[in-house]
Every structure is written in structure tokens, then in C-alpha cells.
Image (cartoon, helix red, strand yellow):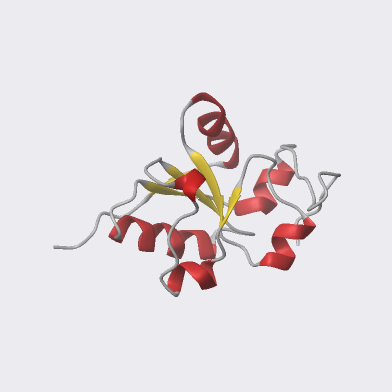
Length: 117
């Protein structure tokens, strides 16, 4: 049996879903990218850790996942991995690049204004 293909949402839709539902924005970029800038409520799990079999962080377990990376390529792959594991995961089209372009907040590792790296 083939696992379901994850859906896709825009950055604005992801922001709305993360605010209005119990969905978690899961950022799968690597640590330097995360530190430079991420969505304020995002949970971090690098794709490299996910592909190595790492479990979801506690804050993301048993919740719908909105998977984001820099531009959308890694998040598509991560959403597929998560869907194969039985998670409800959707990919954020355009990633953090589109998130920032939509005027949505980006913070750095210290909570200040961040930048997409």
C-alpha cells in the first residue's frame, strides 16, 4: 500500500491553520538556518535528523503538521516521510521565503527580527 501524498498549503494558509487549529508548524531546515530566522511558533526538527529516524518533538506529536523549509523542496520530502509514518502532514509551498514575502513574522534565535537563510 502506498502512503498518501501530503497536501500543500500556502504560507498564509499555514499561518491561519497554525493560529486557528492545533496544527504545528514544523521547520525542517538545519540549525544555522533556524537560528537565522524562523516563524515564532514553529517547532524545529532538521530534515537530516528526520531522515535518520528521529522522533517528532513532543510539541508536534499527535498533531497535524505544517512542514516548512526554506523554499519548499525539503519540506515536501519531509511531509512524505511523515505521512509514511502515519502523521497528518502538509507541505508549505514556497517555504520560509514565501512566509517572509507574505509579511509574516520571522524571528532569530534570540527572539529578535530574523532573516530567512
